[in-house]
Figure 1 (cartoon, rainbow over the protein chains, first blue to last red):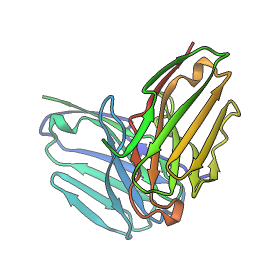
Figure 2 (cartoon, each protein chain N blue to C red):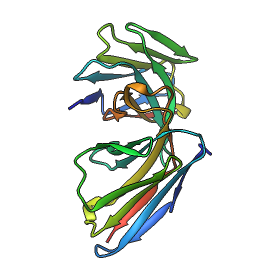
Figure 3 (tube, each protein chain N blue to C red):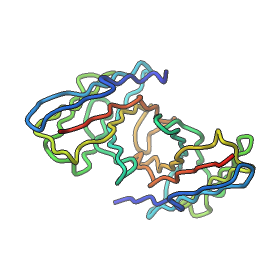
Figure 4 (tube, rainbow over the protein chains, first blue to last red):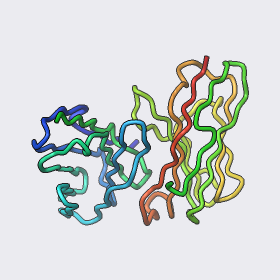
Length: 107
Length: 116
C-alpha cells in the first residue's frame, strides 16, 4: 500500500534559523497537501500542490512538489516560536498522512 | 471552530465497556474519515466514508465499528477495547474522497480516549 515518509522526525532550531521537512511517497501522487498541528490541537490545512515541480509560497513558508510527484518539501525561513508544531504531508489519493516532523523553536 | 464537531472530548472506559464516539460536520462535505493518533503512529487512517459508503477499512480490529447514517454524521462504536487503544481519535471531512477530493480536509478537535 501507499506509504508516506517524512524526515526528519524531530527538529529543534533556534529562533531565526531556517527549517526544512521532506516528504517521500512510495507511489506517484496526484497531488499533495500539507497540514500543521499545534501542540494539543488538531491538524489544520496549509496548502495543496498539484502540478509537477510546483512551488508555492505563504509568507515565510515555501512548498515544493517534486518533478516525479513522489516527493515534496516545506521550508520555513527565519523560524518564529509560533511555528512550533508538527507538520504533516498527505497524499490525497487516500488522505494517508506522512509520519510528521515535530518542530521545536527555542527563543 | 472548524465546522467539524466531535463528542465527547475526553473519554475514560473500561475494557468491558461499550461506548461511541460521535462526529458531526456542517460543511456540506460528502466524505468523512476516522484517524487514530498516538505516539507510535502519528496519524493512522482507520476508515473512510464517501457518500455514506465505506470505501476504506485500513485493517482495523473489529472492536472498532464505524457507522455513517448520513453525510453529516459519523460514529465510531467501541467495545472490548485494550489499553493500547488509548489515543486521540480524530474525525475529518472533505469534499470528495481519493482522486475526486477537491479541497482540504477539516479536522475535529478529537476525542482523547483512555482505556483502563
